[in-house]
Length: 114
Image 1 (cartoon, helix red, strand yellow):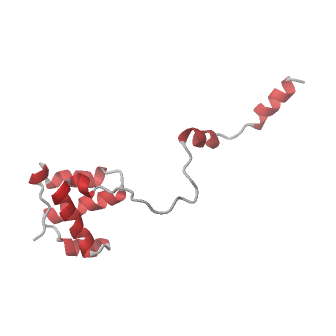
Image 2: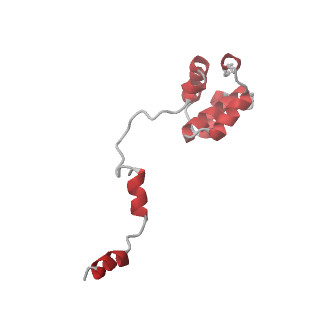
Image 3: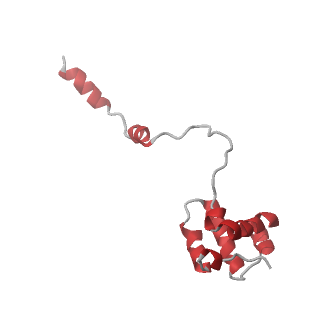
């Protein structure tokens, strides 16, 4: 039966449960939870795949990748795809845009100069 090799990476099932709650990316959390469920015997790869709407081979590949490369091997990494329709704004611009433009301050400068 296919199981994650926790000892090889000096981990416990609880370590992966913790990662499934703490990882930044939802896809990484999903993968760590699958490894936890399979490793603790609460599910197998086929049943877990059906439960989360994934292909059997996908979930099995997560286990194989974990066994080969550890937790970093299953962490999600964006690999491309379409460019966003609206590019993300960098923080200084977005914070400036979130502040309402005060018309009164602009008019005060003009009035003071008259």
